[in-house]
Image (cartoon, rainbow, N blue to C red; front, side):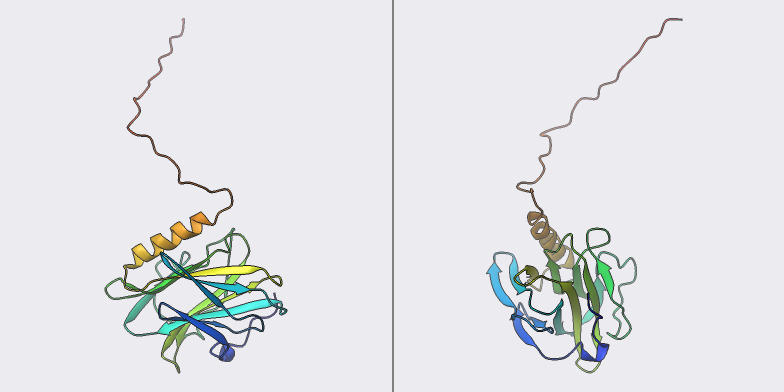
Length: 199
């Protein structure tokens, strides 16, 4: 991965599309993002270009946002300026490229997930103090022609429902996963074994 850009360049213009009020901007040279809609939310496809690292920004107006959740946030969900947060590597070994900006009612303003379950993605988030927008940046190494899919959940649902839908979508993109696990129809009787020993 090439060195990640100077924070002052994170709000630069690039080729962009809008999905459910979220602007998805490609900041690195390469093909622009393409929108493919489905039943549970918009999906943006990004293809690898000639540059080593593909950099994309997801952003929405800050509005009434009060917190940002991601799998590694713990109790630290406050909103910070974009220059205060660092890049973190996520992938199979640690966390996931998934997050949700929410308001005081617990409704999702921006909820997203990518289909990059194994490969490492670098993620950064924060408030643009000059723009009044909240941004999430994803930096990933994509081979020319390789596709990364980003699902944007429709806003207005609770953050729990939005994340549940994103988790279902991600689970469907696991290799070899065709159907959910089956649960037994009813409880199984308890079996207790007794063993006698001769003395």
